[in-house]
Length: 298
Image 1 (tube, rainbow, N blue to C red):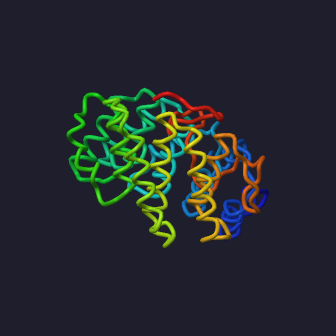
Image 2: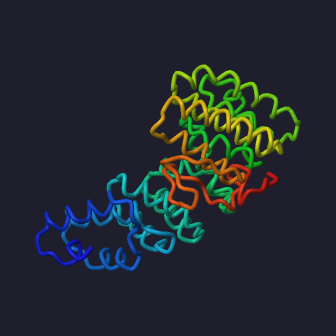
């Protein structure tokens, strides 16, 4: 940290910043603020910004916003800064970043955050993002899921996705429809999707792995907690045998079980470790219908 802040050599400082980013330990927010405030060398500043979006905590909402607003050409840093800003749940800052993206014609940067925008009460922004995705055939599952929370957008606009070949889109379209219709039919359809995908999961097909979890998320949302725990245990055991060293889908299943009150021993994941390999939304949710070990209504 001292080298990254004070060493006069640009290459040495950049290397120190990259080492901090790669290390598993947290980096204090006060240090990140000082780095961001004092750095003027462009190459080093790029490394500083990368470190901030990767290691900054939720007290750095204003810094994440500044990283978005200063982007002339879009970049991974700006995309990641938006992701972190949404995690902070700072509605005013998110709205400012959103307005900036509209001016820069970068609305796509919020495509994967459409559902989170609805949960934050940013309905107008969510509608604009979802409308853009559907108009441009941007097949973003979180935008499709958000339609269920946006009455101004007709369900007919996502009806085709209920039979889509991609199981992630199919599961989220069914969930979105159920939010509105309350037909009671969604759980059985989601069970069918889960069962259909199991052979593909055993082939480590990426869409099947994530589609299975989206189907289970819907089963949780619509009140079948114990069934969902059983499916997650089954899924977890299958994926753990396939990829013994751990993987993002395995960690995502482990996280879901943990939130539901089932903590499994795994050499990669510690029971008391809140640092997650895959970004799990704010546990107050109900992004997945669950939070704090309880099932929320949707």
